[in-house]
Length: 398
Image (cartoon, rainbow, N blue to C red; front, side):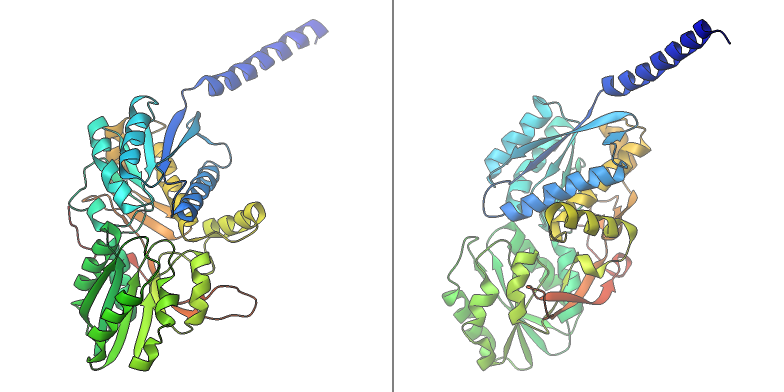
């Protein structure tokens, strides 16, 4: 073959390759807004959620950060944990930034304020990790999907752990949607068990002195027969478990119990060996290839294991990629809604499924018992049993 012909073929091949690369680069990006409380009392939750989201987008796209040839762009917006700011920033994301969909809502109170904005703009809002039942209940609209667990999933799972005959339970919860929805769901879940909820106590979100709250609970439980338990539903700081323990509830035969939490909060759990509850993620309690990758990569990049809300952000990324791969990269809202309703996808937490009725992600929960292990600075929520999604009767409340 003549050299001139070889050069022509090579040039044509190079042009074709360049055209393909340019085509990928010129494709309209898929834009995702992460609207979450980067600053404020739940900053640790927010950081984990965002790290998980970005790791998940990387994992589910095999490192390309593209879906159907379209690059993914993530825009971050800080709600400062304020409902009015969250509402305004989500409107800004949909309106000015023209994002295709949004993820967020670290606090239930902020998430609830943002829900109507999704309906106003006709765009999908994936709630992660806010918990209140009302998000996919009375305040829900069809543009809302939630990958985070809801209050009822927490409640039913913890009722499995605590709901035994002749158990009397008092609750301490924060006085806003997360706490009140959590207690309402827990009360309902206990009805099918032998346990009884005999007292409810609520405290402001920023409470640090629990003396008066604890004393009211002690007074309510002191005269009860059987096993007596204070179940704490709390997000953020304050360390209610430790401070109530300092008041020596054991002298009255009262135990403390709570659900899962982030690793820094689990440090206080070392004081409660044998305490039981339920959680939706602890990195050592799951064996699947996705969790293996997450644990390995998180250790390399952040010098520690992935945490509670890291897995949640990762699962949200999985839902986004699964949906957009199914639509061939089509971001039309109605197409996405019809695709996501009933959709299942694999996550570090196992398989999850968006329930068609309210778009709540159904997922396994994990009954744990706290162990104190040498060389581990936190109380380890060792697995007792997997509470499979199919076993839990989670009410539809919308």
